[in-house]
Image (cartoon, rainbow, N blue to C red; front, side, top):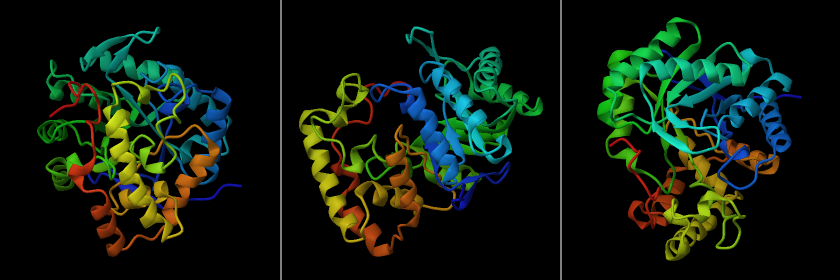
Length: 335
């Protein structure tokens, strides 16, 4: 049996209609502890049954294996390819052994990366193709120009950027219509409200927040001892999960839990409802590798959030109250 979430539309110049919530597939293969392909495929199948048809991956996840997993899930799943909105990314270049080459936005690499992703995914087109990170050594107009060639060739339907500055969003959109910007956005990360959000709304570009649950912090399930060995969140690369910063941030989560309890919701559901309430052009992609968490996340779509709730959450988590940078190394973030 399949059901359907409501849909939302990303972009106005080249609009893409997607499920109101997507599924981030990264953690099924890497970064958040041990992955299991069978569990990942089962989670994607359940997502499709529930109407979560907007799937997000990238070539670097695994590396490369996450696209293969997503492709297998699509091929064996309960919905046809034409019912699925498939997003992937290029630009964070890695070797098969996982070591990093760097950010690559050269036009020849864009073309080669797209062909490789299509092969791994086992599809003939990608619905939304993102530049994963902006290459500071290649003018974004050159990168997006090559991406536009992929649209003309029928390999890609819509173009996106990830973690791009307002200035580069404008340059990119002048080169070829951009449908969506993917960037981190949650109760714990609101930097884009300063300039970027106004820019993309002026240009008619949709927002796809990744880590809308603060990399799991806002679910209330993370504690100082809950993360398994191999989970990247235990490293200095994620300062919000370290020592006193984690203690501070868990105290904020406790306040979110209080607001959520009054609505008979989990803290994660309320945090997702907050993101959904930021506008009809906002489509979060919470990631998970477990069916139970997926079902909890989907339940956020039914949480009615009022102006009073929004005010209570602003009071519970002031923008400057979150401790720690979102990455230990912010050098790859375009600003």
